[in-house]
Image (cartoon, rainbow, N blue to C red; front, side):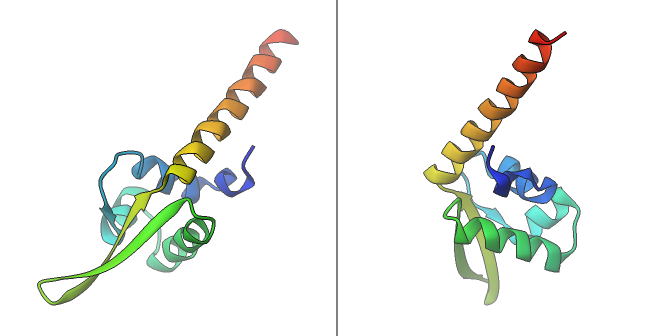
Length: 95
């Protein structure tokens, strides 16, 4: 399992970014329902790991941060889900 994805908030971020579109910080904050500081810290870890791409732009002269899942992030998520499925399969076999 990917320890980076064991966090509920980081897993929520990845889930929100599974589409190919960019998602703004404020949209992520609303979807995940966490504080700005907490979300920022978790996104930072995903960006540092190369799982999420960050872009800072200006919209109507206001700064906006937006995020997109990278191929590495998508691959890590798929591997993480497979690990969880493997655990579930093993649990069924021991019954």
